[in-house]
Image 1 (cartoon, helix red, strand yellow):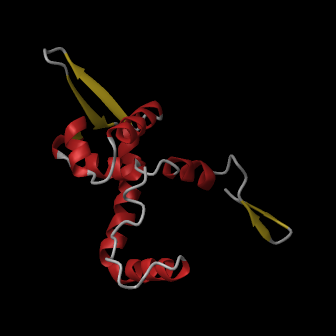
Image 2 (cartoon, helix red, strand yellow):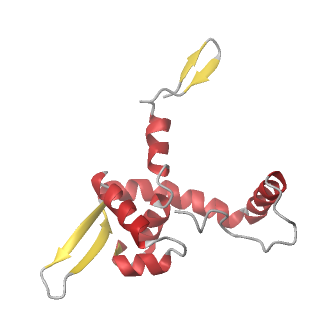
Image 3 (tube, helix red, strand yellow):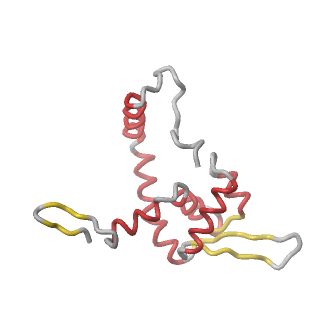
Length: 143
């Protein structure tokens, strides 16, 4: 838990909130977990995931999948067939992370006006012309 020191809140490197936020330091991690959570059987092949996550490069998808696998949140299953077939699945640990991510995404669906206001504030702060087309994800082109 964060610690209170002299009436101020400190988030030490080993505090649970910091450890949780480390997962979100990978831009696409929550989206991959979200996609797998909703995929039939909670498993998908690499190409299916890439097509469902508009804007992710193949390189970034593989990096994200590798990191999530190393953390034990997803499992990579290789089938013994020719040509090779691989899919990724949520692990029981991954399911525990997917549930709160689902709540956060549901909040986004229910509060789109707040997200639009946030994007408007960002546009104003970064001097993006008001006639520029709206972007649903201002970071979509950057991995």
